[in-house]
Length: 155
Image (cartoon, rainbow, N blue to C red; front, side, top):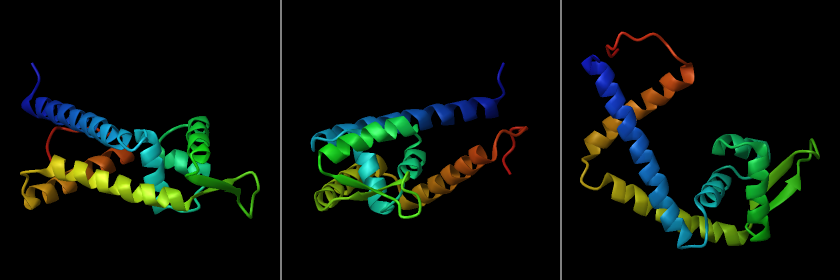
């Protein structure tokens, strides 16, 4: 029989995974109303925050492989939303910038993201959201530091 902390950790991870899937599905439905896919919308939002990043850097931020990001960028370029230019220091490296048309779309995407955030946080007190943010940041840090033996007790 499982101990209570193991069951609680299982419940938390299951709910976190469910929330993540529902956020992605809901956001995808919202951006599709603007003729975009979730992947393209995420790429545009990241490019707005990191102008001139390389394809490799974007792939890392999106957590996808380089060939996948190349196909994604090909589509955005055909839509006139990005332009790729060789880096001054290494012509093999492609820097990516948004076009003016894309900047307008990013504003719309950000508005849709705020609709998703508001929906998700509806009825949750700010203090609870603050604690949730602290816990999520700790979980991310724990995952980034790698596996460790745990006796089930919190620090």
